[in-house]
Length: 59
Image (cartoon, rainbow, N blue to C red; front, side, top):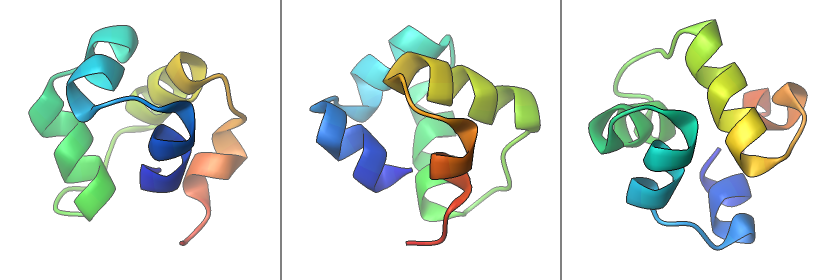
């Protein structure tokens, strides 16, 4: 997820705004501190304009 966000040139804050999530949620998802809910990943994929499968890849 981090790589996709960086490719899009977005900060965690900006991605959070686009996805309708908190910046803390984005941070937790990127660092695997907390498993994200599927609807969160769908919102992030939509905000980044990528397929959900791209976010689910292990980097």
